[in-house]
Length: 277
Image 1 (cartoon, rainbow, N blue to C red):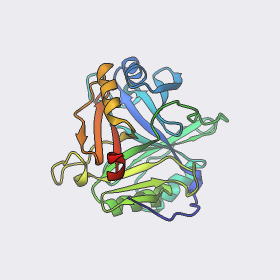
Image 2 (cartoon, helix red, strand yellow):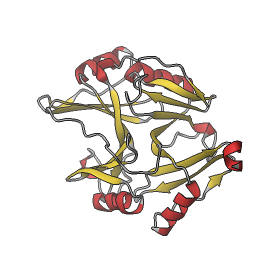
Image 3 (cartoon, rainbow, N blue to C red):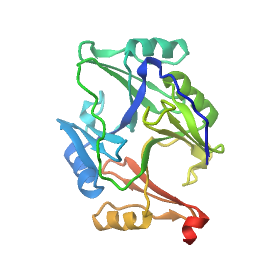
């Protein structure tokens, strides 16, 4: 894995990644799964919405699927979405359209909150909002979690094309690359300027999907030192983690599905020197 030399990056309209949003058919059950079984800290809550602190820098939000237009009980929930905030949403929409990408008109009350959405070339739903209410964005504080790193992992078919899309539309730029398999993006060169979005080439994914299959929905991916112990802990509390896979030295991982099938992948990398110590 190689670091990319990234200097200060201008963020158009102040666009920055805020969180990954997961929908749920039973809000209370999903909230309790993430807090009681996975151990995430509840940072805020409203009717049908809540924020969960994953690391000291990263947040996951849960949304009751009943708020998604067209969704009906008994249907699968909508796939996870990336959520970004813009300081000037109308300017963001105009700029993205000038690049030839389709994006919805802004909706909502300009005095408080307006939103829009678009799809990436791989079908990933991206939600953008502007908060004009004067309230401050709630960001993670001290989550007290043992995880040093988390990201929204987005699967793509064409990694260079995806890098260009996320760079052109949102100002997200690479700062880590792993060959032609994975690129980590963020919305600023300086530390803390933006949360990380990882692009993973779908055909190179660890679970070896069939060539040409549609990329899976985005998921939360968490670096987890002591992966075996975490797998045992989650098993003991009934979270039903999947098989522990991979090898040490090297990359090991497992995934957990929430009650609606949203996946969280935990991973650990041990170098030969670390594995032998």
